[in-house]
Length: 105
Length: 275
Image (cartoon, rainbow over all chains, first blue to last red; front, side, top):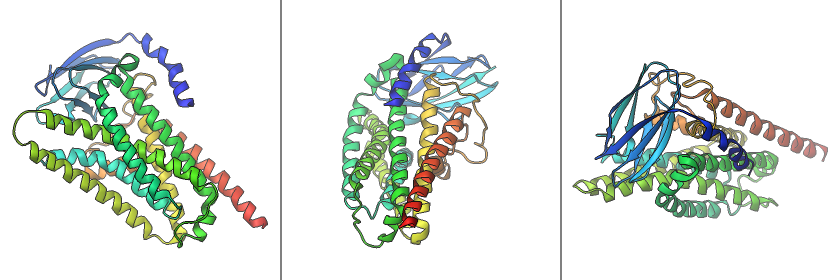
């Protein structure tokens, strides 16, 4: 119960954040674009839209992120602030084709 | 097929390890098995429901519903594990005394069993829903090779259960004088790694600052995708790119539950000394 209350208290702060938004589309088990350039040292917001009929899991160990995106739906993933460098990510459920990279500079 | 088996194995492994450790820790408490089986069944049904409502959950709270859901599930599991461990320290002496006889008569064994039920149910729920979604994706996609992939799924489930049973059987082989300390320590570390995972979800949802991201990068030494990495991830909370806040949560959980166990354990010790 305490956890829920505590999260509810923190919720409004999530709405204040004004972050740069980057769109990413999953189609035919591929990311479009497969390469995203973001500024280093800044928090960015990824808006991932899964246009496929099957669910996908956005996963990146280097970004420390994992999120399931249901079929035909959108999801928000906050990333960073990142040090300059390359950060690979993949769609775990279709990792043969669903590969991408975020370049922070 | 192998890729499918590995993905499912990774999901099942976490729940299987939690169940294996708890099954060993509570083997002398009467009724504990039945409650754990009930937890697995309810968890499986729940994971199908969660999988089917992924889109609804995901859209809650401005698109961070999934992170909140996971953090809350983990939060409840941590409280239950803490309660379990503190309860075990309080009853450790009594349990050790009749560790050889199955089914001891501990008064509040029932509440311990409901905690077990919740922990097992939530572990299966969390890991199961991802497996269900993944397998659904295979079943729904067109093309050949589906049966091979589904077979891979079954291999993954079986392999996960084998490892879970392995840790259970291994713990039972420990001498009684080490047994309670070992299982207590394992459960404590499980709870701490769940606290770190909960922090991970709250950072991902942008509800908590990361403090340092990453705090270190040990992927060159031990990848999280390797079997050893995944095992250590579940057992002690190993991460190759943890955020600073995750470590704060991890240490806080260790300290709070550890101190709780110590306090209750000492009080229990005093009481039995006076007799």
